[in-house]
Image 1: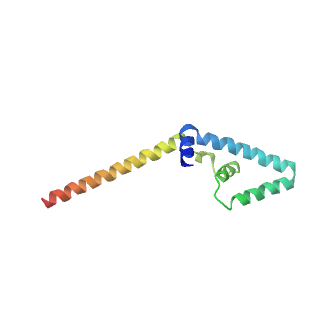
Image 2: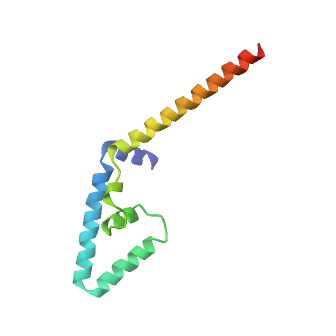
Image 3: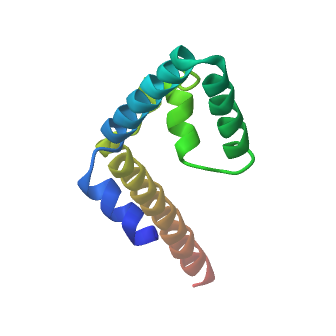
Amino acid sequence: MWQVNETFDRDYDQGGYEEKIAGLIRRLRIEARERDMKAAAEWGEAVRVLRKEDHYLLVMIDIAEGKIPEARLYSRNASLNRLLTLVAVGFGLFLVCAILLMAILKFKS
């Protein structure tokens, strides 16, 4: 499953995907409400059942309901930014360790 996620993140715009799915969910909710109160109640119950567990679909439902601002949506640069931050922090830690090691070796000699 991890490989599928990596491929999706690399090859597709996750923000665009979430926007499209949230738009579909928004329209389905409106249709359920317009159809009748029973359909709207069933929709609400289905979402309550989903909330008992951790489902990615809930993110898009929350976007559709306005609980998560669309600005929070992922961008293709988010993964790159995280990677660069991790590399910078790792390099900084490496430098600190190297300087400490050189100081210890100099002190011993």
